Length: 482
Image 1 (tube, rainbow, N blue to C red):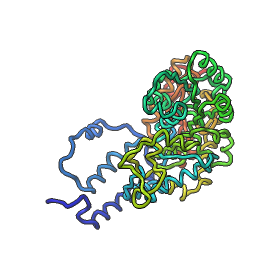
Image 2 (cartoon, rainbow, N blue to C red):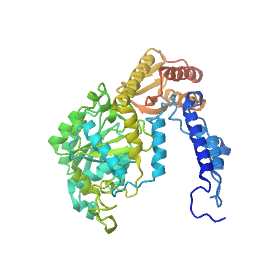
Image 3 (spheres, one colour):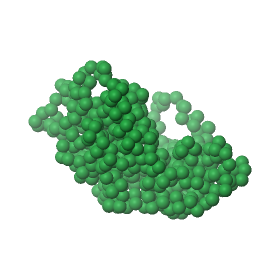
């Protein structure tokens, strides 16, 4: 049978099947606490996703059956309240519905004159307000802070060396970029992809609170200038990936102003703490950044993906990305009308409607309520830190700056301790009770619990801690350290 298009042959049947899928997904979200946080993928199931490309299609009902049987039970689990492994947002039912609506509209937000672009511009206006940026600031949605960081490097590069660097690439420049030893790895990748080379990154020592040492930063800048390098950018962290430490953003801003350097802030984790009157003071100085990258899909609880780049002087962002082309010519009327198309502010021409799920999440919950979920996460993290401090066999390895707790089960011998904590993390994950990750702090392998999920409660922390204590006692090679 030949079909004239790809629409359903029977819309009523399709509607019933679609509603059934939605009902099952809502039921899944309602029952998250009754499910494992995560579970290993069976080999046979994994092999099933090595099948040949389909020549003929399957019914929506069959596809739904396979999705709920084979995909849903084996997802990463970040929607579950027991997931504390990485800084992943949990999403919300409102965000899920917004994603559905955006897909139904299938808007391309590269540009042109339509309301979805206005929705994205609305978020830009709000972001200026949240972070105290001027009216000259521009912003654009990205896949996440990793891409936003790369884009910020491109903007800073064009702002420093002008149009020539876009036309001719790197010539004799010897750039230097500075960040703390706790900076996210996406910066290293960004410098690589920007053609500057990873070696241009200078990592600066941190203080006891894991913040970038301002004196060490200034010394590094002066030493590089004497050696003939060109310092041009400093990256501050509004919540580092390992410990949640917040750099002295005001101090970094003052340093950059005095040294005439571009000041970029990686706010993937903590920037949206501006929504909380209690947490916002921790971000003092963020309003002085030249560029700011952050994620709505973390603490903002927007479904993946929804990153954002905000640039203080929008003209610099346009200069870094705009590219005249006949098929992108602007008109005074019609579909091609409008100014400040998002494609002028980033590398993408084809762009999804990420702004809708962000806009609907903000409209549904408001920044006050979202800010309160962040406060609750930080409160729970401090509670977990206090509980760890009360256990002789556990050792907290870093201050609890925001919502991340780094700790380890103690045993005699550093190598034995590293191996023990790695094993605890893996077995705990495979148990389905809770998910934590591991990282290194002070050279030691530690457990890392990141409280991001708006569903997480004190009872979930107790399950986590009881599991760590039980596994630590079970797997310890010898008596714990006193």
